[in-house]
Image (cartoon, rainbow, N blue to C red; front, side, top):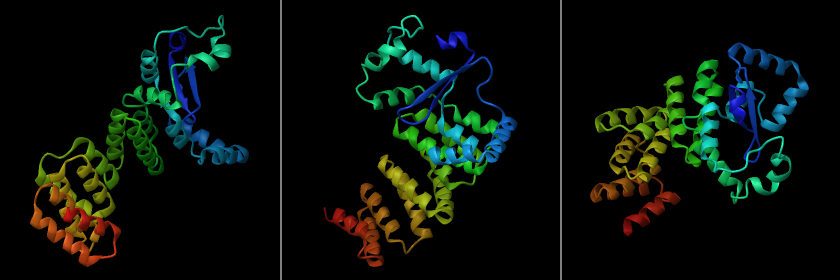
Length: 284
């Protein structure tokens, strides 16, 4: 019934066990200038700053909001719609005060069930709109990666994809956001993938390794092989790159090339555990 009274409703998630439902006739989120003024106020209040750092690990107002602002109006509406019909909380029946601790979540076997409902209610999530309107710093943009990982872990794929698009638009030269975007949207043209993978392997080998590994896990062996070929070209003395390439080549039944890559990996680093595992796979 809150949204019938107040124009703006939001859910703030303090941690996996605690949430706050906010409601107001006025906008709940301030604009950039108000947030900058709030940041200045935090800097002027040592006790407040110390508490924020102690409890939340940050005294950055916009970073804190990004990490804990969870559902906007539309998200709260989706959460309500997903709930089963039941007795409403009112001042008259005092359900919240007396019955909630025993019965309100009786159908939820574990807090993870409630977490799942919250993530299912995200849609695209509120964060992209927030961060674009605030003119956020690079440090705050990087929080999008944390949020994306949480969304992926909890099955909120639409929100994860929106976060990747926003991160890539705000930091187009960031290789990690580029990898996220490529994993979400894919590159159907292998020639274009070869070009992008070559640049990525030279500029950020770890990001290229993550891309190749995830493509392999997703069963996209041909694309994974393109990435690992680029990585081997950029780092010919990397036993990890050679070993990884041999795995995807084996999956593509390119046995002679896979064997050559395994031998190169073994010659480069014969005591490497990963290389040893690759050799064992080749003997099966």
